[in-house]
Length: 604
Ligand code: ADP
Ligand code: MG
Image (cartoon, rainbow, N blue to C red; front, side, top):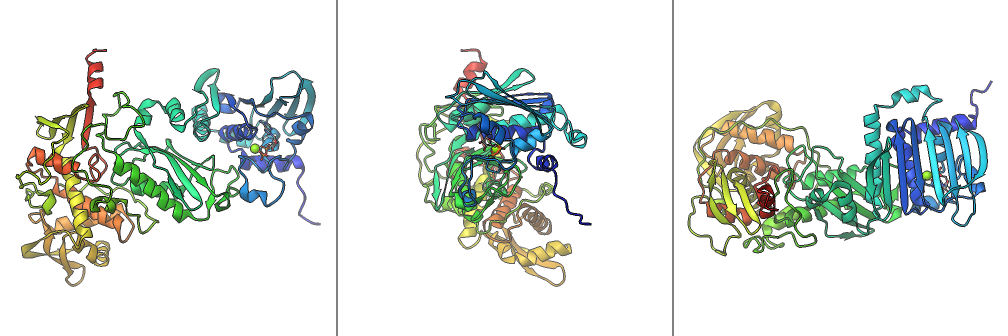
């Protein structure tokens, strides 16, 4: 006897439900997407007990007539695509005609809908996939769908639901993502009878971001200069340097109107922000990508959360460029966290210090171009954090690649006025500055690191950083893996200012160190640099490694602070491509605006 049997429709729906409806949040998403597809201008979401008890989604969209209200509960009934070819170019949220029958098969389901031109609406009640009642009913135009007791007939699945808090958080986060993708639609979300999100229709994305996360959050972002590539365009908002977060919850990617989770985008973001935010943090982002639908396959994930892209590398490059654009454009010290300072006027170029950093390189200056250069290799992955290197005992000599030299007390060549007045030193570590907008504290160590870092990278790019030869060469025995790494990256290490050669088995001979580090213990220095570089980037060559080396050398070098002429320090810092963050992404300057001070002193 044959073993294959065609599943009863009801069972098939329950199986499909497992794919479409993982949890209450996914059913909210499906219902809200349907409302969007129906052209809604307002969407109300209400849920109880994490959505397991009840979810209601109501919209003012086109509604359905009686026939469609019944048909929409049939499997593969959809108004959105008619033939296979449509699948390639689908712009609606849904297209498989699976959501409603799936949801109705695992819940007590009630649909009330009315077309705008109709006098009466229709109500359909379904329980566990069985239609129980259909009748005419008075209703406002649009559609309301109520889902009670999700998985009531699949106890095993119900058990998989997490706590109410978790499920509620998923629902609200999902709504936030959709709301960001659709600023023109108003959303109202109520949890257990309390309004938790209320978003009026917004003309612009910025307004929606503000309504959702607040003005402070918006101030931490900068608008992307629109990138238009062949077949796609990127716009939106990205974190300014130093504005990372521990989680990715505020990293939103919207592709053709659809919020997605996309490694293709996360990776270049991570890479672009490697030196702009601390390790382990993620840049908040609202990236809006429009892409030729033929390049996107949305039909790979049951919940359409993941997409497959035909040209991921082009997009990666573009996202990277967009991010670097925002990062290098920022010319404003970080505000203290949490930000209390009021927003500077939006839309203005990010140089509110009336006098722009005078010596800041033009966009075409070499050091800047160096940072904007596309990463040569895209599969750059950050590995777990390395242990922080131990401080190097010897005091650092001051000689460092020319432009970063701290001994040089002579006024710098371009002697325009600094945008800050130097008031003094605080705690032997911070410079206190006064700028047009208020008080600025500058972390001397972080600033020195930034300056050294950029000088090093520049040096490495133009034929190698300065190297100081040692009177007595040192032999350094390395563990096998480190040794192999050193051999593989001899050229890069030399570029970073090491002079070294293999010397037998697992040993290297070091007869020169990066200028400024020549008083360190060579073996220990090499070890630390190698460990840090290995852990930072897997990229075997190019920008990733170069920067990793420069980062660890400059971190080690600035651990013994040298007394710099403060004005020189500020000047050199402002001349950097990225003055407001250390190479590790810590802030170099923090501003306390006059407005914030006034508020703290109760002056208004
Ligand atoms: P899909 O969205 O993939 O088409 P669904 O099962 O989610 O499949 O919905 C089936 C159909 O029901 C849709 O194609 C649409 O015609 C109709 N529909 C669902 N929700 C709504 C709504 N809120 N307003 C108007 N029509 C709706
Ligand atoms: Mg749908």
